Image (cartoon, rainbow, N blue to C red; front, side, top):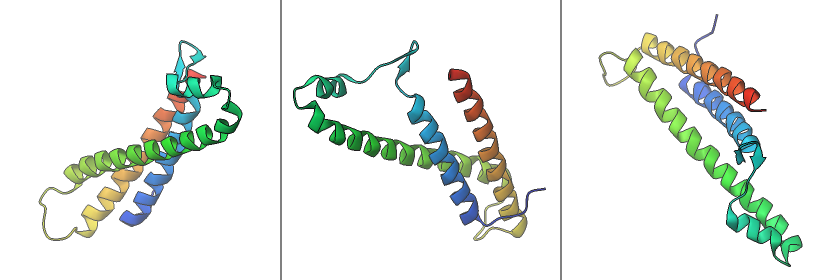
Length: 128
């Protein structure tokens, strides 16, 4: 049985789950019809004479993009979970959450994270 956690713990767990999913998405992104395709600007940098020097900067750029995508996904995920769980658990909004509302939100977030992880793992394992 899941124990009640603070909202901060739930957010930290959600953030870790989102980072893990972003890593999985990054590992498989760009797959189209079984082949890896890169955007033209990245392909151009590999075909240029100075590609040896730009490989490190391209990798750095890809890491930055990956981090930005993970952050955007985390924000969207937390908004969605927050809205759904708040709507489900808080029937009469007031100035603060009751203990039962807080534990309901925590359980809801935990279930949502668990379900999202299961779906993501199934989706990404079937793509390999």
